[in-house]
Image (tube, rainbow, N blue to C red; front, top):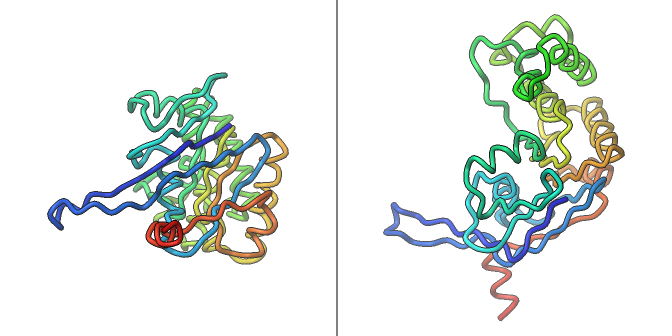
Length: 233
């Protein structure tokens, strides 16, 4: 479902005279349907950079990011912006740590929006969003309120509902339980397991060892670029 071949990413620090900072080099990763691969490694190893590169937020410096989309492999690393948006629309979902709060839009409509964009009727989209919010222990009294006033944990659960609702075949999860208590972590573990059972391919960053052990089929270990170069030498 997802494969990277020789993926590299370098940042250019324009305020430092164009200094280049390599972060990823020769990343070869394969993720199959129904599998959750958790990115492992210390802070600075490039885990978030890899996840954002897979989603097309960061442009790769070299290599390929192949995503199975409509029966063929699309290279996110070289695709034009319109093609990337099409892949995101139908195939590739992303759940960030933080909800981008939209003023005056209710939690219910924030969660339902991905379905509405895909052409699902508003009533059906809201019904499915309502069920997910309740599953994630967001009470009905909060569904009509904009989530700007919610706690961090409540906002993260709205974000999870928004990310899972469309049923993308490939899902990228960035610390999906970072702000959650034990009961809600258990709910998210169940949602990840259910998604895998439906054949979803998942790449996740997860620093909580218990959650990682509960959802990971395998770990993909990453090393900070400088350490990797030193050990290769």
